[in-house]
Image (tube, rainbow, N blue to C red; front, side, top):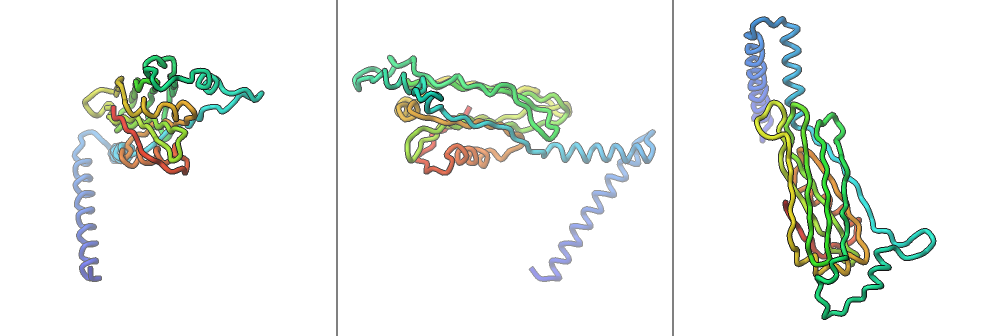
Length: 240
């Protein structure tokens, strides 16, 4: 692009900007009963509202399975795993006592004045069954896109990462729709049953909730975070 065309583009953009500003000023001036000070306040409120609709915020937590007790005894999970040396011919369903969780986020909220809160829980079973559910609620005027993910890494090197993810929307005062975003799913995941031994041996997980996130980027971020720099063999993804 030449300097001349660049200047013309800048002028055109400035003209459009001035036109929009003038249009808004005329609309504000036509508001009956408002003083210039009140009109300025209304304009500022609208500006703040528009900015708030694009606010991004996140909250999350990482947890790793304990290796041992302080006195050197193996952890309960490892003691149980050592005690149940299941023959290969044993039906996997008989190990139903083996489960991880339920893991619960507890109630979480967001910083930056985002009036959204929620919670989620996840439980995994050795036969490949899982249950994942959660909830978002908005209590303010602004609407938000919501995203949540559990990412669980096993002990393999390279590792297998299991993700349980949800995306939705909560509607504030100024938008029709529900203030609540509820989700839940229970089913058998064959890959979970197949990979159970490595998951039972050692695991770590990270959960994270975000508002107004780019979902694909968000999911990729959390997979990398839970992998903690180790190579990843595959990602088993569940969308709820």
